[in-house]
Image 1: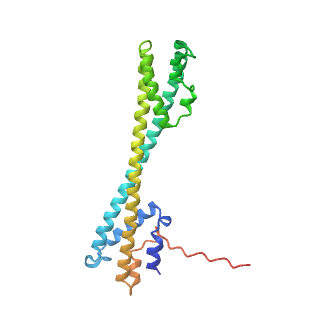
Image 2: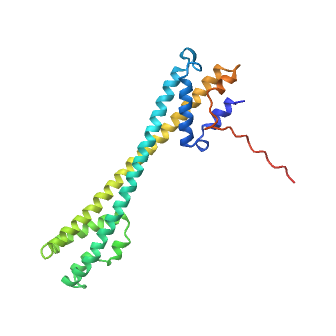
Image 3: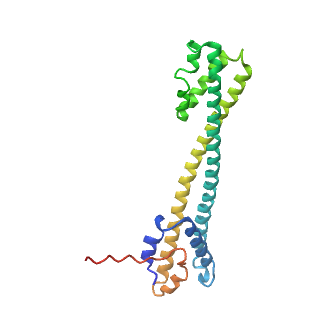
Length: 231
């Protein structure tokens, strides 16, 4: 027999219920709430409305989050490519700057105070700062003799900065989506819990009617494992 107390205290816990099973279970439950044979005289119409709203809110958010995750992956790959392209350009320019100004010159030190390792090992926030500085120094010292090199450099640095900013924006959006998703899942499972309590209270003397709303394919009730007897 279905134990309604165990149902509401155990089965709707996050660890027991995957999104896939919650999706299937809720769709089955909504279909049964909409069945006049199980919902005589519209007794559970308000539950049907409330559960439908929670279902639509949550599964809409899952789709949004999946899209955000896909976009974020693409932006991360794009940002890594832009980072590598900018650093390769700085490495190529190192020889040109060394030849034009001399390795021991103050201008060379402005470009490469710690050599290329400063750029290779910088984390993203540092690298953005370093690249902005490099761009400004290149405009000051290289624009006259090497305008094409400076133009290419600026394009690569701007690409890295814009891609990184887009990625950071997406991270923020994804965090908000994730928070909303958790809230909507919680609302859905609470609504299911509330619905089963109401149905159970209406059928205390006829628990078989509660069974008619329950789908064990998605929410099997597992019996507690028996402890092994001590040897």
